[in-house]
Amino acid sequence: MAARWAARCLRGGREGCRLLCTPTASTLTSDEVIQMRNELFNKEKKRQLSLHPRIEKIEVKYTGKSHPGSVFVMNKALSTPYNCAMHLSEWHCKKSVLALVDGEVWDMYRPLTKSCEIQFLTFKDEDPEEVNKAYWRSCAMIMACVLKRAFKDEYSVTLVRAPEVPVISGAFCYDVILDSRLNDWKPTNDNLRSLTRDASRLIHEDLPFETLRVGAKVAHEMFQHNKYKMEMIEQKASQNMEGIVTLHRFGDFVDVSEGPHIPRTSFCFQYEITAAHNLQTDQSDLIRRFQGVSLPVHLKAHHTVWHRLLERAKKLVSLIKKYMEAAAEHHEAKEGTEGKAVSI
Image 1 (tube, rainbow, N blue to C red):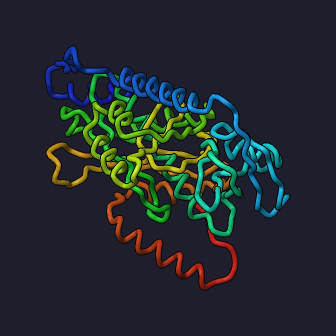
Image 2 (tube, rainbow, N blue to C red):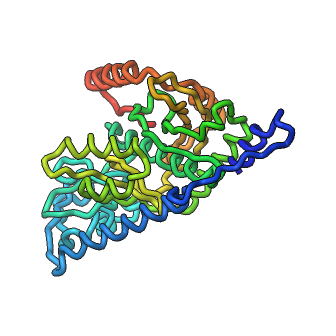
């Protein structure tokens, strides 16, 4: 797919010569790296579950608007907010994007570790800020999975990071480094549509986002082939006394992400990868910022509105500080007005 586009670009003007990547014996293919991380994720998840050989019970008190005061008896380190939502209604299962566990924003599939109070967040809450951030974050992770696999093993793809940008920036982002032989390659509209189709397949698979908190040593083992992720792991581990790093997975794709994330890929509805921009950085390698835009299944837009969002999402998202300041101003203005805030 993407490898074929790039190969055609590289062959142009080179008398039909085709360049192939010849990995050394110590180099793993993209699929092998993904498989290795997935196996380590499973191994660590199993190890953590073994720390609780006896099922302990916890009490979870629901403090939301409907059925307030309901108390659920759940299983410690096994039951999740989604399991609690199942005790309430089908609506809570389908509409809940995140949970608030004792006031802390929590993934729907992240196990509960103690007795607590819980409520659920949706896209149509009065303050959708945390939900919007989780949605943007998850959309970027889906795009990262697509990019990692798009070029097969013919060209290397190094995932750098997903910049945390608010929805008012107009696009979610993921920075990557492509094989140096692709430095002159610019994706066409057909290329971007092909990437979008790959993302749509992941969305239709309805894959859950899983959370796993691990020690830095385990995270290092998973991401030893990516120096940028190793630096991120060091940074994340230094921010807490236990040296814990949070990982997320959907399907077999694992990434370093603090989260939280949406419950499942199927929460995305309209989704499109819109652009790839070259960034001017002090790195020796060329960093590309891939961008996209999406709306969740709960907030469908008219095609004219969607077209405007697509055009906006093609512009380079670069002034992060500017967007953060704008978001702060928006939050202050919202606090001084009546009525509901506008979600994504």
